[in-house]
Length: 529
Image (cartoon, rainbow, N blue to C red):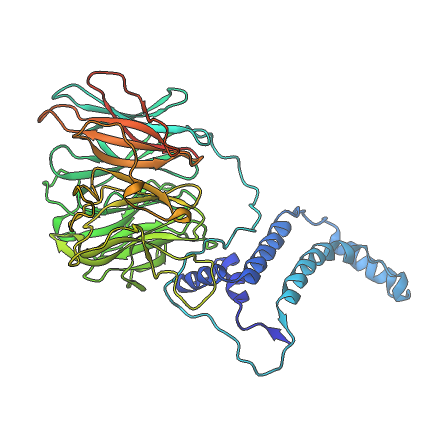
């Protein structure tokens, strides 16, 4: 009788006590996404620990020793069936509960097959699939009550920038339903990206740094209004991704060095691109990589590990990506031709880039065959890798290898809808009028109904010279919030942007926070969880 060799009980046990190495943790996450038996084992082990941790701890009576000795002496000459058992029963009660649960787990994993079959052993490797369903059946532990959130579930919030010509720009975060706002201080340029932490306590955002061609990354605590400056970066492609860990402790982002002087707060131009982490528990930021060509991609949405797992992409002629526990060394990319994966909310799929990349003075872009791809389902069994992608656009064909140089994409909350915008198409136009694909358009569709095409372009109400800044899906999946930037009238003129809610059923869009001849900059928007 032995434990099955194709299951990872030892790794599961070690994960509960924090004894896994980074490589073992990645191996466990990768296995759990494919193995329902081991997910059930993890759930049972977790339940056992929860039960045992809930048992009260009582100090022993001061006279316990004397009572034990007295009991032994008084029962020495009595038959065994008449000897006191109270002390034994009390001491064994907790062990019985634990043993009962453990017995169920062990016997579910016993194999009574013939002796001699080799058992499996964990191997250190980079994860090839996220742990999307690894904790789907694990009951949450009871913890302290979380602080109230600024946005309620599904509530719309957006950044708003105001200011007069040649004056400081004032930024605030506004809850659309209540009109309440949080002051985000003064900035030198408009916000272009935003991400709300899963617990609703933090807002991460990126603002332009005046006319310098650089951006700044910030974090705003919505309960106390504390603002943390997280760095300055060249406004390069693929640097506006803001990724929160599932527990809201870490924010991952990318900085590209730029020379703006010693007092600009930017990374050195010789540093290139690297992934950074902001730890909300300490208020400190730190390098996650020191390679000069590394980009923060996304955290695995549902990781069973104590340490969140971050995917980092390595830019090169043939880019690659790998999953690394927080604190691990970035020692390479395990998946070739996979760049900047973005996981669906349930972790079952990912959107990513593939193609040939070229460096442009520290930053990178696609030069040949750059196309967004949709992965297969990570939960599916079979020999084919889920990372053999399907092009996100069904009607685009790169001619001579010319395709997208860069672009942005996002998932809807239903794990089905997806959006693509700001696509810098360098190839031959793919429509008769020469306007498709258009960098000024946003394309929204779903993989269940055929992915994206020219027909997926949103019907936006916008000035002809407006440009797309950001898109956010509403939590009910019925609409998207689109930020449309307007050209500046000149140096020193306050920037302006329109924020529109665009229903996905074809209804007319409506504006948020507008109504003036010279509108402020409204957007990007986020939605509460």
